[in-house]
Amino acid sequence: MVFDFLKGPASEKTAQTTKNQPRYFEDDSRIQGVYKEVLVVYQVEKKQFCLVQLLRVDGVNMDILSVHEQAGLNEDFGTFLSQNILYEPQITSLNSPITIQPFLDQWEKSVENYRKSSNPNEALLQLKASYLVEYQKLQKTMETSKKQHFVTLSEKIVQLSPEGIEIAYEGLKDKVRGVRSGLQGFMGKFDCQVTICTIQETRTIFRKYF
Image 1 (cartoon, rainbow, N blue to C red):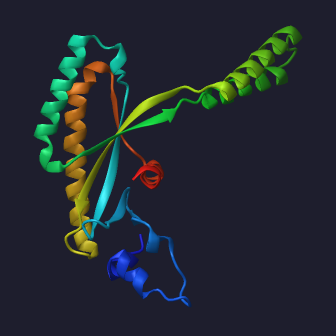
Image 2: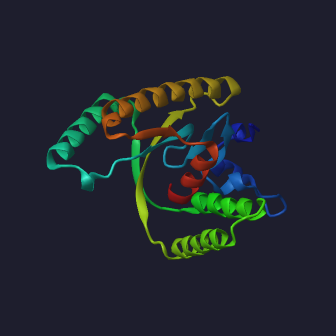
Image 3: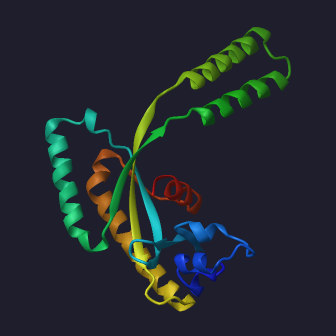
């Protein structure tokens, strides 16, 4: 990682940039860089740098739960928030389109492998190919989406130095570990998956929704 942001806040860097000087993505973005597997973000409203990581929660559809189960889940969620209030988790729910592209890729590969096999049955090959065409048509007309829930955790960089960033990083890791454990504790019975987002996924979601 390049520690260019240590020179000062993004607003200061922008003010110092003249017409004859090159402008960089960091001059106009909250995202200032990457440290290990987390984002370095400049919080304009607080005028401070922090490290950010996202957790993705998949697997709960409230509509299929009974009234009793929904009440229990809401109660457990309230307990989770109260226990983790000092971590200040920010929870965002987004509609994510459902894609069958991985399935299509596998099916297309299966058709191609069968076509190249010795003495393939022409009727069976045509049947496999026709299914592939139908699945491809289905994907183009699909308008199905699912809810994905993201938990944003951040840690302020108190000292703008490599050592200060490492301290913030260790603090953020503790937060992520604690919050993830808490989520898995009360949502595990619903077969939920609590995943630490990759840096690529975090960057994409952060730019798009935050």
